[in-house]
Length: 456
Image 1 (cartoon, helix red, strand yellow):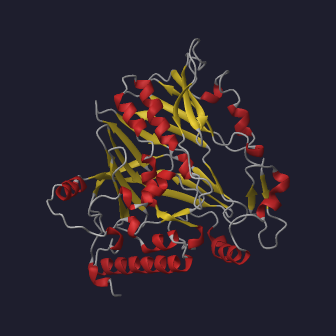
Image 2 (cartoon, rainbow, N blue to C red; image 1 turned 30 degrees about the vertical axis):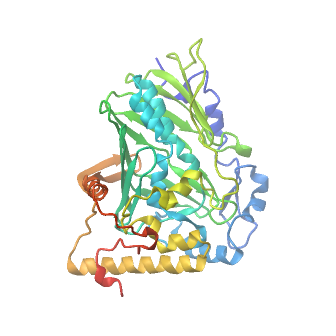
Image 3 (cartoon, rainbow, N blue to C red; image 1 turned 90 degrees about the horizontal axis):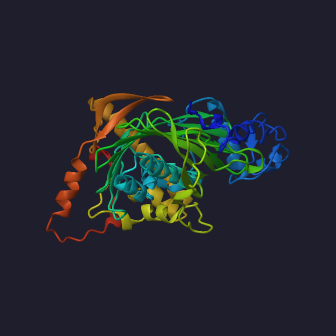
């Protein structure tokens, strides 16, 4: 009988189980040598336990900032801190979470290939490689800004795609996104659950990601692995996503199951991914292997998961060159997302690019960024109070609640669906004969429901 778990096959992936067993106490050591921080764990991804205290003295925090942050955060250990804590801008990047959602579109050509492909198993190779491709961007250790309720992000001029995302809920924080070109439709409802552990945080993706291929309507569903951010206070912050990614063809029942290997001693196993594409009878058909910061390859296999004789590994995806020594570890595509080059004509005033805190941080003015961030958060609180006093309910513009609560491995998710109004909005603008030129860079950021609160 074919193995359902690649870790149990006797050949190609036999080393995976031993790699996983190295994780845990391998590189972790409590910060017992620093007064007031006993019990916090420091993880050096490139070393062992003996250099943990040296690693603890590294990182981006100044001593006074670190002390202040720890005093504020220690009471939250064990809690979900998704929307409980106001964080300093020194740990932020000049991008909102809605923009970060759009980074998954960088290698959208892989979805185009899946749509053009006849082989059902190669379709899973392409769609899964597409889902993996964004993890290089996810390893950035800077935090994106939480979107303001009603904030949006639009993107055009990339792969024929029209992309729209909107913050549809503030408590709990939820975003919805929709992208489309001639080959595919992408829809996501995104919510996260966290567990703060002192010097690290576990992040669980309570989202639903669906891709529909236009040629025949085949639908794929993605369940990504959880993510762990290590060394939040002590040491150099780094990200790992050990666990299982599942891409399921909901139309045929075929699926890909890939294992993101945890980082072991001296970086062993870090970035590595291995797994299989299975048919609906759970028989392996194609093996996949690679590193999420480099490339993914595939090879046909037999029922035991071994490579078929006469075949060879072929590359499905390769990471594009990235800028050297970039301050925020941005890819070229991340810079493109942040620019107005990907903005459509008559950009919505609620767009993330227009956030004054994001722009100030991009310009290197942390003081102004912190002030603007506080101002936006205060205005959002005033809006909430006004809404409650008037008995109003916030209603997103471009997405509707689907009256569906979906189960995920980490909790229930309220599903939002694209309502098509943005397509109509863009068609009306693109079809307009108006030649009026608008300086979108000077447009005031405006996601607000109540204009009369602007002066408050």
